Length: 141
Image (cartoon, rainbow, N blue to C red; front, side, top):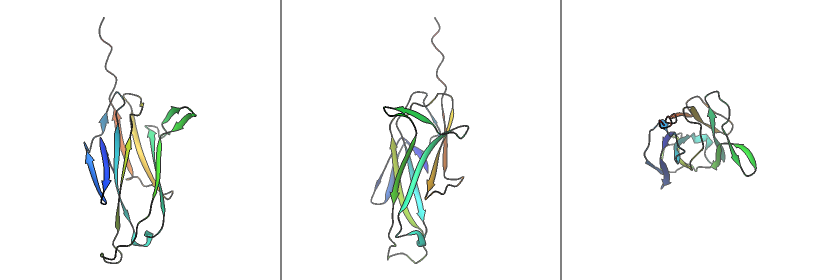
């Protein structure tokens, strides 16, 4: 997983713009998460559900106000891969995913972490942390 300004998938490849940052803001900015998932040979031909969710520094879900009330910041989707006939049996199969996000109203001067879960499983290395810059001091009068 990689934080970036924008990402897209074309022909099974990730195209990344402005990738590799961990400091943003303080104003809300668009962002993206580029992901490459290695699907095990025995996990091919089966549907997989993923969810990407945002936590604050204390591990609590980040909430945003919507017309329907407060909701956690999360993105979810599904993928399924076929076993290619051109690779040896047992070879992991690549899946490229790109999640583009609009500006999120995050508190300045704080630390956040995107966490990924696939089929209900999450691992420590399936996380991306970043910090929002503090707000600039008000101009002197």
